[in-house]
Image 1 (spheres, rainbow, N blue to C red):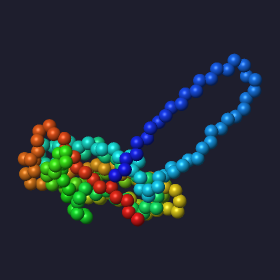
Image 2: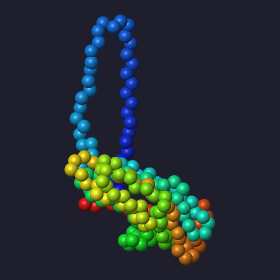
Image 3: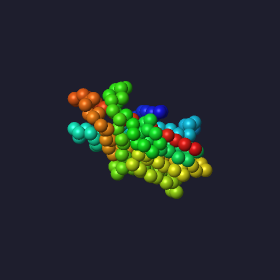
Image 4: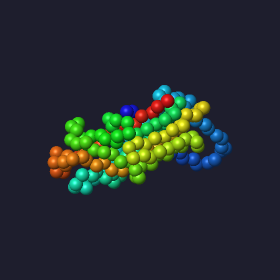
Length: 178
């Protein structure tokens, strides 16, 4: 996954004028270079979400994760739980790099998908996937924003394998397709 970090540079110019002897104009010119990148799908934002445990078997998202993509020539983008077989919604709860438990992800109803730059794009926020389709256009880029919320329910007695006051994560896979 690519993550782009933008740095802002501020330029301050102080000028002192004691008498106006005439005015003119000045311009700054330059080439934009590769604004949209060479890739067809760029990650412009990847903000982690926050979840809380209910003490029984469910992790509830309290702050949605946000992924923003810039696409060019891509027709579809989707989010699914990492490693989940198509349509299952089942993935792993991790403590660091160690899988602790199976969880079933439910993105509905707290997730959203939005598209800017393509009026006839389609979006769906389903129980176990988030999708954006019909993104391809003749020129320019399409911006896709996935706001990933919902909950994950642990299976069986998985809570017995958890530690007190420990951070856990659930990963999601974001894919761009032709």
